[in-house]
Amino acid sequence: MIRCICAGQTELFVELVKPYQKMVYGMAISMLKNEHDAEEVTQEALFKAFKNISQFRGDAKFSTWIVQIAMNEARQCLRRQKRAAEQSLDHGVEDDEGDCFPIDFADWREIPSEALERKELREQLREAIASLKPIYRDVLLLRDIQHFSVAETATALGISEASVKTRLLRARYQVRDSLAPGIDGCWNTGEQYRRIRPF
Amino acid sequence: MQEKHIIVEISCLEVFRQISNYVDDDVDAELRGRMEHHFERCRHCKAILNGTRNIVGLIGDDRTFDFSEDVSQRLTSGLASRIAADREKSG
Image (tube, rainbow over all chains, first blue to last red; front, side):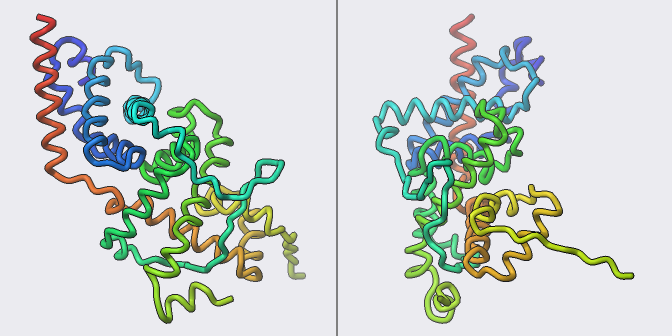
């Protein structure tokens, strides 16, 4: 299909990228926190992909290629909004070796997935992800939201697989820690709360 | 004679470093065994494991980031219009 598009059947491009719309939009909204901006960035990223389709060589997966375009577009949007510099949820404790430790030991073994029906949990999750430092957020988005493999994530971000794993660990701990207050006080009460804080 | 399996203890620090890989099933069998042995005895590490696993599940859940049919339609028609306009422009 890509060959046909490059040969002039440009209308096929809409069909080609339709299965990737959700992925690109998911990347955008989790970086920008705003549905309107996310839609604009998605539109722009898809159009840029169209304009540059002849540069896609097929040595990476199409999803990896298009997600790189989407991330660049979202980063540019953040820069324009001068938000990037303010982004930090760096409250994990790092030692000299670059280790990162969890700061909350509550045993919230399970927030039922039905809790995602609650807007406040979804918002807090999005907020926690969007507030991560970009290097951690980008890895989390690709691994845990887009379900890219470690190798695909490394390719998309141009980093080593070891860095993917280290950054993912930090991102997960930081999101977990940032949700802890809500987990204790809002999403779970009564017997569930006692199960969370048994010690 | 029965073969004895000796499990080498692992520290909480090492467990913290590896929990994410453990959740992703990206540790070798020997390390997995050591970590599971540790989780049986350390409620703090078990708590971190449970929380991390739960977070990964919630983040990956489709409901966390809604994508409505309306958005999809707007994206599709917007992109089609821009491509058509681009084609006309390039003649």
